[in-house]
Image (cartoon, rainbow, N blue to C red):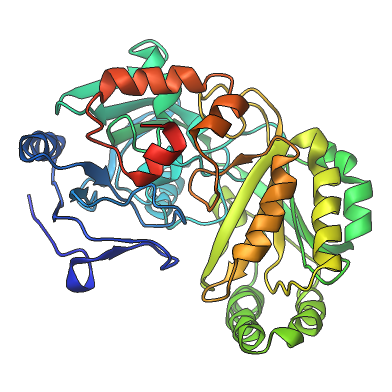
Length: 439
C-alpha cells in the first residue's frame, strides 16, 4: 500500500478550490484488505478517516484532518453478469472509465449526470444525478455495494443482505464507512437522440409540464439578466447513429461552451457591469442542433470552466413557481450573474437521504464563476428554495443543519440510528457531517 502527499505542502484541495484539508497522512490501498487494515490502524492511532474521490463536491463532505484514503488503485470492473444485467466495479473507478468499458461490452447505465470525471463511489455517495422523467439518479441504479465499516470489517449490502444498510449507504455521505465496490444495474447499449434548441424563459416555464411528460430526459439552462434558455431533450432512438461532427463539436463544445465562456466569465469578474450584456450574447451563442449517439456521449459534456455551485431539489410541482421567484429576485437586485441556472428533474426513489426520496423532484442549480463572490446570490437563492421545502444537494454549497434535515427527510432518523450502530465513535466523521447529521 502506497502513501502519497496530499498536494502541495500536504494539503488536499477539491476541484473548485474552495475546500482544503491537511490530513495527518494519506494512503492509497491496492486492495480491500489493505484498506481495512488502514482503517483499523487509524482507529488505534485515534485518527478520523475519510475517503476522497475526484474532489468534485463543493462541500467539505470528504475533508479530514486524520487519515485520507485515496481509491486510485481500487479501479476496474470486477464482474459483468449479463444474465442479471449488472456490473460490479471497484469504488475508485471513474464514471468515464466505467462508461467506456461498458460500451465496449455493448452495455450502458440507464441514466447519468452531465460529467464523467467523478469516481463511482464519490458520485453515488453524494447523490449525483442527471435528469429523467422515469430514470433516477446514479445511486438509484445500484443493486449492491461493499462497505468497510469502522472496525475494519467488510459488509456486503443489497436488498437481501443487510437491507437497512443498503437503503442508506447508496447515498451514505461517507458517514457509514468506506465504499469499496458497487454493483450497478445495466442494460444493452442503446442510442439517444438529443435535440438542443433555444427557447424563451416564458415558453419553457409555461409548457414545462408538457416538455417533462413528452421527453424521457428534459433539462434547460436559463441565463440570468435575459429571457433566454437553452433546452435539451434526450429520447431513445432506433438510429441511425449520427454523432456531433468533429469540427462542430470542437467549435460548440470546446470553443464556445468552454474557451469563449471562460473569457466571458473572466471579463465579467473583472468588470461586473458588463455581465448583463455578455449574458445576452452568451445565451444566443449556441444554435439548435440534433444528434444521435450512445448514452454517455449524449448525457455528458466537457466542463472546463471552474465555478462554485449550490443546488436544491424542490417538489417537481413547485419548480415553475420557484424558478419564477428566483428570476424576479435577480431582476430586482444589483446582483450580476454570469453563469446560467441549470434545471433538471428526477422521479421519486427509495434511498433514505436521496434528494428525491419519496417525492418527484426538480433541481435548480445556481453557479458563480470561480473567484467571484457568491455569498449574496446563494443566500438569496437559498431563501427561495427553503420556502418550497428544498433539499440541498449533499455535495454542493448550502447552510442547512441536522435540525432542518430531520424535518425535511421523513426517514432521517433511520439514517442517524444506523450511523450510531455502524460508527458509534464517529471514525468517519468530520465537521461537515457533524453539522449535517448532528454529533
